[in-house]
Amino acid sequence: MPVGPVDLLVLSFPNENADAAVIAAMQDVVDAGFITVLDLVFLSRSPDGEIREIDVTEGLDEVGLGLLEVQPQALISEDDLELARDILDPGHSCAVVVYENSWARTVSGAIADAGGELALHVRIPRDVVEAALEAAEMD
Image 1 (cartoon, rainbow, N blue to C red):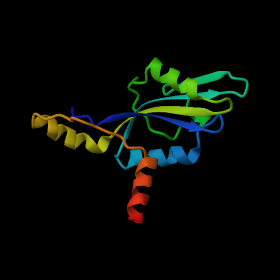
Image 2: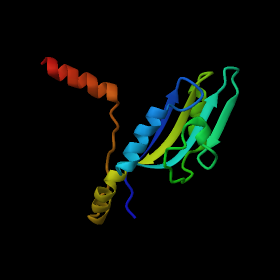
Image 3: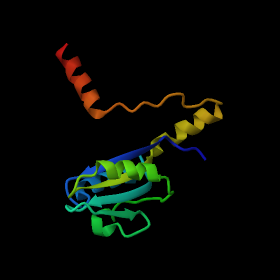
């Protein structure tokens, strides 16, 4: 079965619950077939430093993630979670999300059928692209 590129995101929020508008926007992208969420773990750190961890198989409704459709695949490692815990400030939360770029499945399958392979996949940060576009407009 062809699989599109898979990415891991850590989405941070300035309180102990996920932002409903962000989760609704992600679900819109899922509904459109652009991505498939394969795994999700929600972490929050209370103001006194205690960490709460909720796996996708547990109740995500209480932290604002119940709307998001996830096809659990257990792809988030302990190393991924440790990294997220290290950057989590007191009173904040984050969602560690692994997703497939579903839109690329057909291309991925065609490449494999042709005996090819994805030789390089580079993610360019949004702020770098915006800066380059601004610089191009000034020229």
